[in-house]
Length: 403
Ligand SMILES: Cc1cc2nc3c(=O)[nH]c(=O)nc-3n(C[C@H](O)[C@H](O)[C@H](O)COP(=O)(O)OP(=O)(O)OC[C@H]3O[C@@H](n4cnc5c(N)ncnc54)[C@H](O)[C@@H]3O)c2cc1C
Image (tube, rainbow, N blue to C red; front, side, top):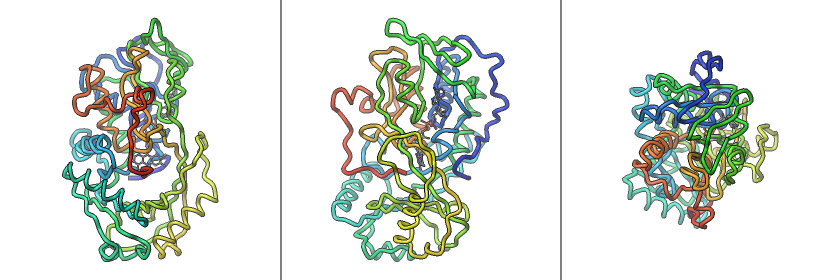
């Protein structure tokens, strides 16, 4: 597995526009992990002629910059349901797609340093156990005994779930894309959508820079660009692009033990093994932008957090870094489903940093919604865009952790 700016394994030579169709039953805008999962699941449900349009290359957006984290330790029921449904797919991925997803169950360890954080962890664990998630509450001595390299003198406690881990965004994207293509989906790269045609409140199709394609259903899977795609249909989608930087050290041997994905909740910092080095999270911007630069100050902050929590990392050297965009919604939960004002316009947006791990379930529920009229696997009504108008935002106990 690898992360960061790695090209999709999917054979893009087979994607060309020489014989692009003029009509379809469904058009998906965006070829990231969400778009390809929806394409695959729609094809499984025989949803007719499906076209996916990607402005650049498949996966070139947030998906290729994602660190692949998969966890069940969420603080809301709806996110836990999406995790449990998605993990079923990650577990049987190779069987279904013929590609190893590199799913590594190293566990997620959350560390708390304040009483309010401990309160949140206790609430979370109570919720998670209702779903039979095998999560443990650990005291500082237990944490030190298991992961001796961690500084614990300021730690009040932590939670650990061994079933959590990470997988390869590149591999999973390729699995969905190849599966969709085998099932007849047409995937086009270099096909930027610049307009959505609507008459009398109904979707009629899309315009790219070179083509017009008619279709009664259009899916917005534009990741951090969700809001500009929404504008094409006259719909305000409250999704903002927020930069997260990531750094990787040169090869560094920290321990022979398995290193879980470890989150210093207070500092909003995390790290995990990445091949022979360590992957360190950099800061999350406070203001929205499409900036993808990596800066020295952020590298210094990532190093400082690393040396504080893992003093041995003083000897490590940062060798690589990249930045990507989260697609943040106002309550840090996805925006899924129909738009009441525009018939045929379907949203799969606002994953707020969890879109990779929830992509299998998102594809499944959106396909159910579009073909059966209702998402059966998970009730997605709480994730409707209407919640913002109605003031029914999904509340979390404290600012949620984001990979
Ligand atoms: C640094 C970082 C780490 C992350 N780590 C994790 C993690 O550990 N676990 C996790 O679950 N998630 C993680 N995420 C979040 C995850 O990457 C995203 O939630 C997920 O990739 C969203 O997928 P997407 O398909 O919606 O968006 P994208 O992958 O961005 O795909 C959207 C696509 O739409 C295309 N597009 C946009 N506009 C148009 C248009 N007009 N016409 C045609 N195409 C268009 C874009 O080119 C892009 O390829 C991380 C994100 C970042 C930045």
